[in-house]
Each structure stands twice: as C-alpha cells, then as structure tokens.
Amino acid sequence: MPAGPFPTLTADETAAMIPDGALVGFSGFTPAGAAKAVPAALARRATELHQRGERFKIRVLTGASTGASLDEALAEADAIAWRAPYQGSRALRSRINAQRVEFVDMHLSHLPQMVEFGFFGNLDFAVVEAVEVTNDGRVYLSASVGASPSFLRHADKVVIEVNRHHSKRLMEMHDIRLLPLPPHRSSIPIDHALAKIGTPFASVDPSRIIGIVETDEADGVAPFDPPDLCSERIADHVVRFILQELRAKRIPPEFLPLQSGVGNVANAVMARLGQNKEVPPFVMYSEVFQDALVELMEQGRLRGASATSLTLSEDRLMRVYENMDFFTPRIVLRPQELSNNPGVVRRLGVITINTVLEMDIFGCANSTHVCGGQVMNGVGGSGDFTRNGYLSFLVAPSVAKGGRISTVVPMATHVDHNEHSVQVVVTEQGLADLRGLGPTTRARTIIDNCAHPMYRDYLHKYLESAPMGHIRHDLGRCFELHRNLLETGSMLPLTGHSRSAEGK
Image 1 (cartoon, rainbow, N blue to C red):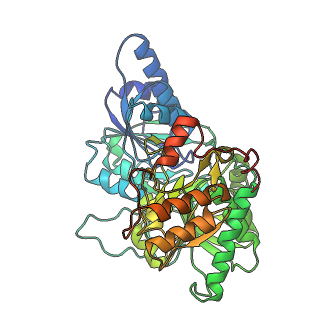
Image 2 (image 1 turned 30 degrees about the vertical axis):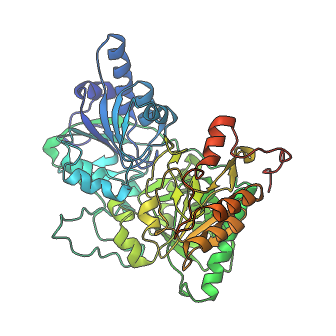
Image 3 (image 1 turned 45 degrees about the vertical axis):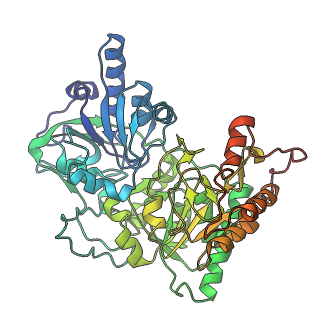
C-alpha cells in the first residue's frame, strides 16, 4: 500500500530527478539504516550518462559510513564529487586518495550544526530510510538515526525509502530531538544513558516530500570476525586496568557508562568486559550497538545502551526484532548530535575505547591516514569521545603486516588525537597510563609497555639521541621508520625475525 498521500516512485524515477552537482543527504550511520534503492539507481544513471559522454556527479552527506549500495556503488560509478563526514568504502577510498573525490574528514558530532548553518551549501535533496511516514510529516526512522533529522529539516526535496525489512517497533527505541541554535541552547537534559528527551519520530514539512520508494532490503552489516589472540590480549589489558581503577576508587563503585568504537578489536573488548564477573553490570553511551552487545544484554551484563545505530549483522538484528519486548526498553537510538555530544559525554563520565592506526612515543595518535597521506576511513566519532571521556583508551596491535609495520613510532605521520587528549594507550604487549606523566616519561612508558620487542631498542635509541627539549624529536630522523617502509616494504630490517610478530 502507498504510504500517505505521497506519490510512490521507483528508485530510477527518483534518481532522474537529482541533477548533476546536487548536494544530497542520505540516511545511514554505518550500513544500518542507510538509503539503498535510490543511491543504487543513481549509480546506474551515472554509468549510463558517462557512457554517453555526459557529466554526472553529486555531493554526498551521510551520518557516517554506509553500505555497499551507497558509497561503494556511487564511487564505482564515479558519481561522487565531494563527500563528508566519514566513509568506509574501498572504492571511494581509492578515489579520495587519487584526488578524484574531495573528502571532508570531520568529527561526527559537528555535522548536524554544519548542516544547520549551511556551511556545505544548500541541501538540495534528502533520501532517508524509514519504517513509516505519516501524512503530517512524521518520519519513523529504521535502524539508525545519525544525521537524518537534520537532513529532513533542511533539504529542499525529500524522498523516503520505506523499508519493510525492518521492524516497525523500532520507533519505540528512537529518541529524536534537534538542538536549538546558539546562543539559545540550554543544557541537554540527559542525566543517565537511557534518559529520553525527544520524540519517537523525525519531522519534515510534508510539502517537501516528493515521493516514497518502497523497499525490502537488509542493511548488509558484515558479521564480526571471531576475536583473535591479539584482540583478546588487548581486551584483557583494558579489563585489568578498569578493575584496578575500580579497586582504587578512581571509578565510582556504581561504575560509569562505556563507549566503544566500531570494529573487531572494539567488539572483542566489549565481549571481554561482559564476561568478567568482577566488572559490574554496565550501561553504554556510544554511537553504535554492535554484535557482542546482544548477548551481553540478554545475559544481564549490559543493562542498557544509548547509540545512534543498530550496527548488527543480520542474524543478530533478527534476534533483536524477534524479542522487541525485551530490547526496546533497554536501547535508545538518538541523533548523532546527541549520541556523540561532548557535553553529555563529559557529564556522564563515559569510559571510551577507540582504535587507532598508529601512536607515537609521546602519545599523539593517528586514526585516519597511512604514512600521513593515504586516508583509510576518517576520524569518525573517536575524537568526540576521546577528548571528552572520563577515562579514554586508544588501542591497536603493536605491529601489522607480520611485523613489517610498527604501530608505535617516533612521530605520528598524522595527528587526530594529540597528547593533550590521550590518556591510556594499549596494544597486545601491554598498557601505558599516561596521566600525570611528562613527555619523556610518557615516551619510555609507551616504548616499554606497548611497542613490540623488535622495535623497542630502536625507539629507545631514537629518544635518547634526539636533541634535548621539552619534547625530544630529531626532525631529520622522526619519520625514518616510515621512509624505510616506503623504500623497502618494512620499517626495520627483519633478519632473524621471520616469525617474530606471529602470536606474540
């Protein structure tokens, strides 16, 4: 049945309405709740136009990364001219690094305000996935909220993808509120993770809805790999340290909310925290609700979770949908302006856990760029939480590529989290608590606890031979490991270390 008085369109009909150069806001925070049919149709249209020698590229906004039918399909069709604020697509990444797509990498909590004030220009279209839309413009979103409420509020023209694959009871989880503009913002009345302050729907002027596209498609979130030995060791270091802080009463006995980034390591850390009975049952104030959390919630170890998306593999998502009486009182889905809000993170005292690509010996960390130039995904929400957490962990394996790459380096080639924000860094080798330490002590602590043994001597010698100063750096050698990698394929010669990084 068509939804409301709005015309039902095919995805191809909708794509034909979107002109070259348009700025389009798509729903989606990870593949969860991402628009699917219309971006796939836009990719087909772009391919056809390009074959005829006609130009067609659009500017793309989303909440975060998206699914294969959005970023990947549009990138492969060379249909993206500009992209913000985050991405996780192999095809799009290659085009960004080749300067074929302009990419704006930014903190996710900043995006709604940027849209609100028009910093990206006029928002021409919004394409938003929902489970239902009413005649008066109430849009009941699907598996994520992200920035969709802001896109609906500001887009000139709106298309709703009504996806029948998702449970209509998702509306019971949603808590949607847009913040008033400065200088008239009052405090955000979220005083515990599950507090609801808004409505179960986003709003749009019905006159701007140009049509409904009916779909029945899964989000396509890939299941996480089983935790490997490295991830489990990182997780064990984090759990031991949290228990140490609890015993020292530096974490209150009622515990604090947790945040975890997306990915296999973060998933393993959350599973390990839940398995350890010395860790009190906890709540989360995070941006994603991912696979490991389903079991923890069923077991009573996770008492509740605030997020902006259900980033669940299909079997876990169906498990939630089949038990909505249990899950809906325990999960709140908010706009990313609230889920990632620095003020709320600081007020609740969130303990944050995020992954990085590399860390330097003084505590600066790089979560976005390989060798300083090649972007991977983006800073995402890691900065929102790391800079404002009560206790923040940045985690990474100590080596990559069989030991050819050290993730602990003299100087990070790109800095997303500077030493003023970084508190605790962790690898499978160990943990370095940097709070209260001066730069040289920080460096020795990171090298001794977090660097892989094959790189420790080099890093200590670098530190001791660098010119004296508050921070000791040798600008002639600080990127020597990276240069070695680019020139030889390895940061350090690995003679005698053929098995050195495996299983250590």
